[in-house]
Image (cartoon, rainbow, N blue to C red; front, side, top):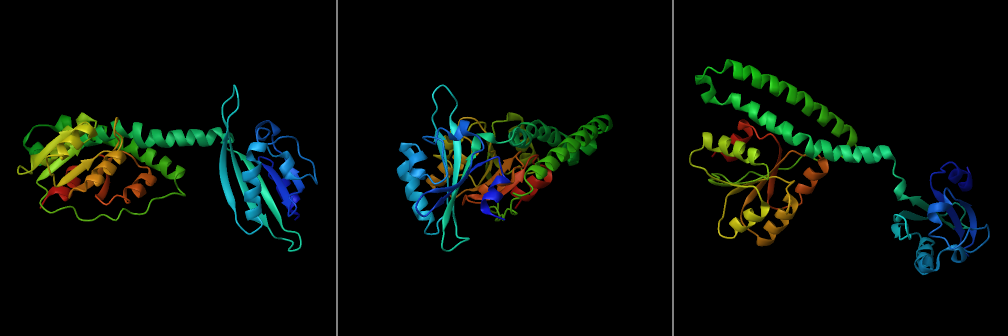
Amino acid sequence: MKLSAYCDCYTDNSYFLFNKKNHITFFNIHSIEKIGYFLAKNPTIGESFVEIISQKYERTFSKLVAECFEGKVFSIEKRLKVKDMDDVLLQIVLTPVFTDPGNPQVACTIIDSNRKSNQMKLLDEYSHLASHDLRAPITNILSLSSLMNFPDMESFDTSKIKELLKDINFQAEKLDDIIKMLNRLINKEHEADDFIAESTRIDSKHIMLIDDDSLTNKLHHMIITKHNKNKRVVQFGSSISALDYLKENKPDLILLDLNMPEIDGWTFLRLLEEQKPEVDVVIISSTIDPAERTRAQSYRSVKDFLTKPLTYEKIKHLVDN
């Protein structure tokens, strides 16, 4: 198949072919409306691309094309300012074509990055919604329902309460499973590697809880101290106040939420590692975004990444000697 015929098959983008003399040997423009801001005029076969590219971009473009003839490939994004309109974002891909050794060419593909499909935008929005906003109240329900597994609950006549909690837990787990399933569908090509957790410090007696959700902090505090009387547990609803506390205190373990106002968990980790304290961090988050688990592995202080709700069994594993 001729390259020009191949390009004709994909009409969502605009294409150009240039020969070694910089002359246009083929072009297919999908929408002159958008790429017109990148061009000085409409192209014609045999014309030099130097004459059609807007003057402000001509020098850089010429340099990149020359390097393409040496075998390099480029993919760049260019945001064009347009008066009285939203910015135009173009992705320009330059690729050498050596199908004919005696006639090397460079293929230029111009992609309108603003033309992301509405479906992909909705999926992106849903992915964030599912990972953060929807799961936050669900994890609270799961945390509350997990209280029925406490040993002390057996000494009370709580059968009706237990039935209610079981029903709440059943419904919450159904919602949680649906969200996880949809998230896997969205991220099926970007599944995170298993988090290689290191052992947290043995005998973590001084523990910090950092989460802007006061209910989450109270639940985690209650679970930790219920059967670990020797633990010193301090709660913080703000990363700023937690950083102030760390200036004069040295905890053994920090349980950290990621999505917080003012300073989020990622910024907190960066500031924490700048101070180089000897403290282990376990991320406790409602997110199920695999990219965030992968990102967490880049922080030296992070030893594990747990998904909410933090149950009694998980807490016991973390803080028991």
